Structure formats: C-alpha cells, structure tokens
Image 1 (cartoon, one colour):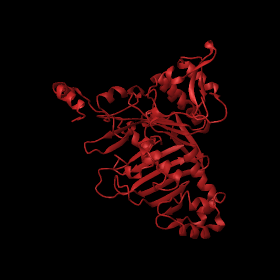
Image 2 (cartoon, rainbow, N blue to C red):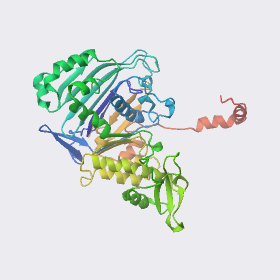
Image 3 (cartoon, rainbow, N blue to C red):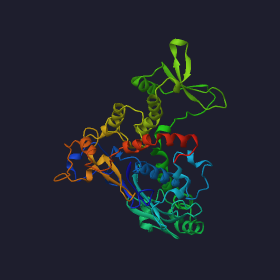
Length: 450
C-alpha cells in the first residue's frame, strides 16, 4: 500500500512535491473508505484512490513520470544511461532512460534530485530515500552519481550510504534476524564498501547480494509486484503470452464486461496471423461462421481501451497493487470510470488494499459522492513556470475560501476557487490568422511556417 511519494528538483517541480495517500486525520468527517495495514503492532491507514487535476502542461503527468522513473532506477539498480533505447523518443517514459531530462530546466546551477517513497508490504513499513546528482537539465555527458541512499524498515534506519556505507546497530538488526545475515554483517560491510560504485544502488547490489538478500528482495519486489504504472495510457496495449496457438481466448470476465458496454461483434480474441507477427485483437462474428476482423476496424476505441485496462485492473484487486494511470479516462465514458472508482471504495471487492491513482481533465469526477477531499489533488503552474501540488483537503473548512463536504466542488473549480485552471481563448490568434490567411497559405506552400 503506497502511503507517500516525494520528489525534489524534478522537471517543473523545482521546490518538490509530496504526493500523499495518507488520510487527512484533521478532517473528522472524512473517516470512510480507508485501507488499513497492521504492521509491528501499529495500524497504518491509506486512501483507496486519488485523482489529479490541472491545466495542460502543469505537471500532472510529471508526478506519474517521477514515480515511474524512481521505479526504473530501482529495477535497473543504477543511474547510468547504458540501457537507453536507441530511439528514446518512442519510450513510454523518456525520463526513465534519459536522466539528463529530469532536473528542473530553470535552474542555473547543479542541484540534486531527490526521491522518497513510503509504503507497506505484508510485514514491513518501508521508507526508502535517494539523493541523486544528474547535473543540469540536458547535460547529457554528466557523470551521474548517487549522493545519498537510506532505507528505513518499521521506522528503524537499516542503512545509509553516501561515499561510505553505514549499517544499523546490531540491536536493531536483530529485530530482522530472519531477513539479515547478522553473523556476517561486518565482513559483508567491508566487501560491499570495497565494491561500492557511485552510480549503483546499494539496495539492489551490495545490500541484496551480500548483507540482507531477503530484506532487500522484500523491498524490491514491492516495486515489481505491487506498483503498476501505465504511462500515456492511451497508447497502452496488453500483449498476451506468445505461444504456439493461433487463437488465444480472453478470460470470460473480460468478454462479459466488454459486452456490457457494447461489443460490435459476438466475441473478441487474440489471433496470430503468422509466426512473424505478434497476436492482435480480432472481433469474431459467430453468426457469420466465426469470421474474424481486426478489432480496430470494428470496435470503438473506448471498448479497446477498456479491454486493455481490464487485465491490470483485475490483477490490481487480486494482488493488492497500487495502479497508477496517466490519462486513465481517455476515451472512456464517465459512467465506466465512476464504476471502476467505486470498486476501489467497495470493501467487499477491495479486500487486499488495492489503490487507484490517475490524472484527468474531466471535472465530472469532482464530487463528494465519489471522492474524499484528501483524494482530490491539484497541480498548478505559476508564472515563474514552477509547478505546485496540493490537495482539496488543504483548504480551510470555515471562513473565506473554505471547502466542506457539502461544497459543490465542480462549480467552484470552474470559477477558479481552487486554482489549477486557466482561461483559454484562441480567438485573438485565429483572428490574426484569418487576417493574414493569404500570407499563411503562401508560407505553407513554400515550407515556411513563420
């Protein structure tokens, strides 16, 4: 269960942001739809869901991108660019491969990038922090370094690392003797220190291989198994496991849900036309002797998007994952999205602490009947081009500008009561275009768009 994620000097967030899934305990009227995890005689609570609003280019996607980048660093175990795709522009998240894109582009000096995440596993509360040196924005040849790394388990500092490795006192480590090789700590520390590299994580290298394999794996596995991030969801496609079958049937539940919103065909399957091509979705018409047609030619884009989201959605509930989706509601009817949000708030379905985090432009979800105030987040970008993240629960409950659970959130958002919205008027620009239309057309013909 994700509790908190912080980042500093990341993209537009020069001053950092703190994305919290911890309930706002000061608002007593919000004590509903909460997840809980009992660890080491303590109870930890988390939000079921969170939605992020803001104008275009404010930084909504950058929050998801930052989390995805952090996950990629943990997965790779280093901060060098050796695993860049040759064509990085088609990567789902370029910043996960191009670390020189990460630092705030307004900074005139080198400032470190910081990540911090807090989450619960089945048995641990984990707090993992990184401070990284990527140089300045677009400094591609800069030697990336890990300046600081810290791991806390159940609020105990297990290790910290800068140029040197510091391991917790033996009395603290004994609490986790089933996960740490206590007897060989000193020897392991010497070996790990000798092999420590400036661009490699201690967590995924020396700590995992020499000192505490089981504890390291418990932390790393959460990133792999419990945190599912779909960046640029409109381009997201599920690919089935490739095997020797030409026809691969979808699980019946997915077909039932797809039919409930209106399939144009009788059935939908994966079909592999030949060995060289990957399987593709096909619509099947049973009343026409099971003739199949490529699904994109028959089904609506919204139907195909829902089908692609259903497998990770089901897995989220089964495994108790945190599902983070960029532009989650793209091409989906609001009633479909509302139904999915409702699943996360339903304790009879959400039994394993599943969470949904997404950004959107659709104000229809700004409703007290759908979200708690602390689940509604806003991102605004000031005139200084610096982004800020805040919650609807940050507003006072009395006095001028107050927000209560009886407030009409959507109405107030449109009158800019909460910020994170811009007045858009293209008319003056198009009036100028129409006045200069002849010149505009001539420039197009000459290949001069100016």
